[in-house]
Image (cartoon, rainbow over all chains, first blue to last red):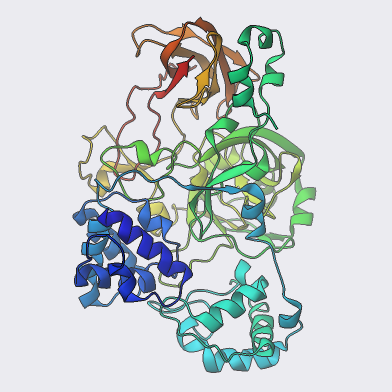
Length: 206
Length: 376
């Protein structure tokens, strides 16, 4: 039951940018300890910027294996502060330990799998000025995503030659809502998104 | 619409037995199992493993970082320890040699990882990180002949355009020995199942290494580099390694006691019946696929008594190393619960083991597949 509550909260957090902490205690579920709850929050900002939550939820690992996995990911630039390691590992081991019960992947249509990678431009977000976008990117994005948009340790992810930059509506939603450590920037205009996207599309993997 | 399972439930099997096997194998729904949503890691449902070719749209998808954006003109360079390097667009590549088509199993090294005990970290694949397709392209050896490798070139390092999410994450780079690169079955493909590669499957170009695990079949291919040594980095020096000799489940294995995995072991998987199915009393049919990266399949046997006795299944289609064949066993059964086990043997005498060899990264699960169903 405890595990189910943790899964529900994590899954919920992925679709809602600002989960209410009180939600954890709502309903007839076992109360979640404060350290466990903070482990969950660490997972949201540190783990889910590179992969979605199924990657955590499907694991069944004892604490020492979770510790080794977190150490590997921190070595690869996951945004986990030293003091956050222990609560993160505790929460992962408590939620997705060897006895956490069965997990089955969701069934999706082949069409939706294909469509998720397809370019999809919102007309309002098209025809941007890449030159202006380059300037905006330097001012607003480069401090986390890097000057060449290739990502930075513990911060933003690579944006060069990614399918998402050909889905301008998705870019706009992420910029305005925020994601993980990325703060919401709700005032970003359609034109600014179009300009930034136009700039990003000129960049190439070396 | 009456699906196949419902059809079997409501129809006397005796009348169906007169139909051609193909007529029974109505296509399952076009669905995938979303093992990881992002980056996309999608498994093929078991029910598709009753036929020679897996349709591309339900063919499993695996990648570490997700695909790069589509660039149909993305160039491929062949460089390193060569007399002269080459940079080719996909269009130019087609003129570099005879176009050949191979039928081959593509299987992720981690397919079946979730069945290893104790569990190990990684994508927890069930049976669905595999499929068989035709791949069309040019032989890698034809391209290597054009660049003339130096005599000290021993490894071919391959890399694609799927950049890691951060510069601190190691790039996905693999190396194959030059002898395997020169094998006539190793191709650089632009088509799968007769259609241009989809983005999820590596468009515009991917490597195809029949018999070898999927980690060698690099997608979105941009670099083929001849080297004296295998590539440095996590994905060659740490990942995709197996113990050099069997280890106890859960044991820690020293790096010096590990070797890079290459060919996948002999295996068979039952597509039908599915666990929990109900069939009518009378004629029953167990169908699946069997393959080995070492040799063509010699035989598949099915046991209905927990492995005490085995019955030979019929093999269909064309055999080959790294190529699957459909197997089929028909028999009569009275009402009750039945469990079928399948066991494949390849032509080098490798026999699918009851339990797969546990290893620290959970590769190459190939234990006997068991399905249990109710005969009503």
